[in-house]
Image (cartoon, rainbow, N blue to C red; front, side, top):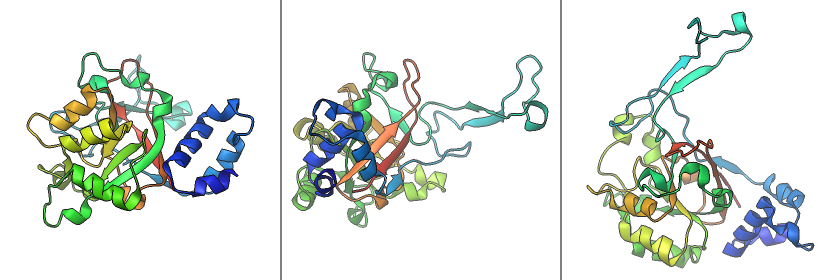
Length: 271
């Protein structure tokens, strides 16, 4: 039963699978088991939506580059080595908003929740992808509009409540060219679009390929998203390998106490 239901690409089935993975169906004797859910998931294609990061990774100039050094014994300052110590490890120094990363509400709001308080249920969600690359030929810095969303819905159905909405711009393909990747302006979200998605479609979170949500002087789209209590994932990759609807996204990050942002690992499970 579960496999047949899952293969139908409708919003309710995304929620069924999410509930199954989280164990929410345990209270229903006739519901699919976690073993059945895993059997289905194991047959699906997984797409990594995360960039690897390094000291040369593109980052906002106000933060600066990361540094990776061999971790050393604090009493002698000698780096640990496999030969001398039987292990090796690295000391990482970087800002939280580095590489593919999570922005929790507290990043912009003094009373917003920090990354360690984002509910686990909000870290595995139905995934919808808005592809605006066909519009970039005429407008290289196009910002997704409400009309764009409505046109998407004519083809793919209504954006499901509780979804993660990602914006495909193919900006991630410039990742190996930092100056090109960091260009401004760039394709982004409009404030009207994010308000529509959160208020009219009740999505849970957004994500995009760029370093920021928008290029307005006041950062109005990013400010609105975070101050309204939502989280976002920035600097996503490989959205060109994900269908407009039907996939799931799983995203996670270290549980830093009162954390204001950190590199994240996101991946899609395709239908």
